[in-house]
Structure formats: structure tokens, C-alpha cells
Amino acid sequence: MNTIIEPFKIKTVEPIYFTTRDERAHILRQAHYNPFLIKARDVIIDLLTDSGTSAMSSEQWAGVMRGDESYAGSDSFFRFEEVVKQITGMPFIIPTHQGRASEKILFTIVGGIGKYVLSNTLFDTTRANVEFSGAEGVDFRCTEGMDPALDAPFKGNLDISALQSFIVDKGIADSSMVMLTVTNNSGGGQPVSMRNIREVSALCKQYQIPLFIDASRFAENAYFIKLREAGYETKSILEIAQEMFSHTDGCIMSAKKDAFANIGGFIGIRDEQLAEKCKNLLIMTEGFLTYGGLAGRDLEAIAIGLREVMEEDYLTYRIRSIKYIGDKLDVFGIPYIKPTGGHAVYLDAKRFMDHIPVCQYPGQALSNALYLEGGIRGVEIGSVMFGKYAIDGSLIPPSMELVRLAIPRRVYTQSHIDYVAEVIVEVYKKRREFNGYQIIFESPSLRHFTARFDPVLF
Image (tube, rainbow, N blue to C red; front, top):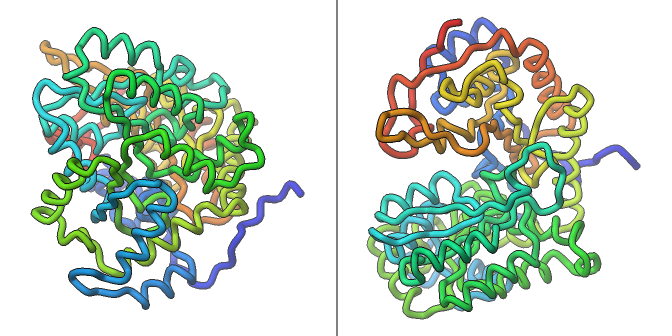
């Protein structure tokens, strides 16, 4: 059948509050034209992030009630540890309160001035924690991943030859780590192939550089491998995930993504000495080894969610529902990163708002237009999030100007998604009516969270 059926039933509902266009215009002004600063109740469809916004299952809620809140040696931790070890094969599992806490601990130890962290693409908090340590993050996205309109199966891959040239040029000692993000979030939620993981692993072994995976969306990436890579058609998601991790020295994960949890994360490590250093820092900053800043109930929810996310009925629905939006946009020729990724639709703001120059942040303009017209909150992934300043103060933009519409897991129905597509189409039809923005306040790092803007008048 062609109809996409959610593989779950709704047991609890949460109200959506509807606002008028005039009300939203006022709300935008009060929020300084930054959707991060809008109150959640003033948003009709919230696609700002898929992180921590999932609906937990009845089994997860049952697990919450079973949570062991012991400070040390909690039963909930050992159930959590068992599941994570089964999936990743990592002997040392360190819980944290969320993904960026894992990043902070890891890069505090392996980063530092003069060091490089190499990646297919680092996302915002990962890059910020790398840079906070004094190291520099360098991306090597594959050529296919640079073209939003190109339909290719594994646009999240890392460019092997470019990585090798960089290592040889800069020196092995200065390359502290390779971090593969699966799926590639900044690159459009695009998957990384098993072949690419193997090739990156072989190169890292050749130069004795640790390879880690940012595994926040590991199950979605494994499902794409099953769909698109020869030899994996009959393998289970667990088997594919286990093979992915087998090629690496460690991983970090925000459990707020593919584990359906509202909070939580972990570090998985093979090297005992590195694990001990991470544990010491964990105790100083997060909590004891068996809770890591989490309640026992959260550890239970993560353990259950990690199993649920590998159910193929769910993943089939998840990937098809994202593609469903892209199919609707295709009818009107609306530009987005093709093919649709695992957790979001990424609108190509540079082409969508082609009358707005990059220096006036077309992604921010598009994000605000979606909120103004339909109460939809997305996030800019472009020159606001990743832009740098040259010595003369001019903007150095990233390669793409995007707006990510991240779909929370098990939250919205098909009618909600139909509404999202309708609003996008409406904004596209009247796109020339919207103007760009200038930044009037920004923080020294992760400025997109708190920046303030003013419209640039025509």
C-alpha cells in the first residue's frame, strides 16, 4: 500500500496552541528574529530539533517507573551498559547527561592547541567543544555532498583522498582523532556507507589515528546501508550497526536522538587508558561512573529506546515519512538537499531565497518566514551557525545555506506533515516578499542559539 501508516498508536496527547499571523509577527520581533528565543507554546509545529523531542513508548515509561536511583552501582546502569555494549562492542561505557557532555569530556582530553579533529562534517556543539579545547575541526565532506540537488546514495561520506593529503601535510602527531558523523547532520542528514567507514578505518590504522563515530543517529544510518549498499539487504539493523562500530576505536552518542530519550548520552571506548581519563573527568563534571549526570529512570528509558529504534517497521516508517515531504516539495520545484535524509528535510535557502545575499543570512530569513506564515520552527544551518569572520571583518560563509526541519520521532502525524509542506509551498510562492537580516548581537561561540537580528530593509 502507498499510505504511510505510523507503526504505533497514540495513548497520550499534548495540546497545540494556534496563533495568528499578526501574533507571530509580534512574537518574532520580541524574540529578536531568532526562533531559538521563541517560547515553545507559541510554536504550532516545532521542527527546531529532533534532539530530546521524541515521544517515549509505553515500555519506556514503564522502565521509568523501574528506575533504580542508587548513587553507585544502580541496576539501571547495568541494564543500560549491557545494551550499549551489545550494539557497539565497546568494553568501556561512560554515561553522560547528553551528547555535548560526551564531547566536552572527550575533547578536553584528546584536543588542545595545535591539534586537529578531522571529520566528514562536525556539527555545531561538536565543533564548539573541539575549538574550546584549542584544537581545530577540519571537514572532508565528499564531493557529492557539496551539491544539494544531486541525488546520490551516500552523500555523508568522508573524502578519503583529501583526508590522507591533510594528514601527510600536517603530520600524524597533530591529528588527534577522526570523527565520523553518522548520519551526516550538517550535510543534510545524509548517510555514510559501510565501505566508506571501512576505508576511513583502514587509513586511520595506517597512520595510527583513533577513529570515533558520532553515533547519535546510528540506526538511521544502518537502515540506509541496508537499503542502498550491496550485501546488506538481508542483514538486521543490529548486525549492520555492530559492523559499523567494529571498525572504530570509540563513539559518542546523544541518546536524545536515536534512543528516543528526552535526555542522556554516552561515550564508548576500546582503549582502557583513555577510558580511565574520561572516567576521572566524568566524576569531576557529570557524576559517578554508574549514573553520569542521569537519573536511573533515564538510563532505563535509553536502554529500552536503543532496542526499539532498531525495529525495521519503525525505521521504514521513519525514512518514508521524511521522503514524503520531499515528494511534495518536488511537485513545486522547491529546492532541498536530495535525497531526503534520515531525520530532517533540509531546504536549500541559497536557492530558495536567491534574492537575499549570503551576507544577509538567507537561511535565517527562510526560517523566520516559515514561522511567520505557518508557526513552523526550524533552524538555520548556514552562515549564522557556521560562518566565520575574515581579518577584515567580512563574512566567510560555509559551503551551503540551509534550513533544517528536523522531525521529532513518533510525535507528528501525516496531517501535521501535510500542513508543513503546505506552509513551505506558500512561503515559496511569496518568497520575494521576505528580506534578509543583520546580526546586532552575538556570542563568541555557538552564536546561533542567542544571536539577535534586525531585518535589512529593501
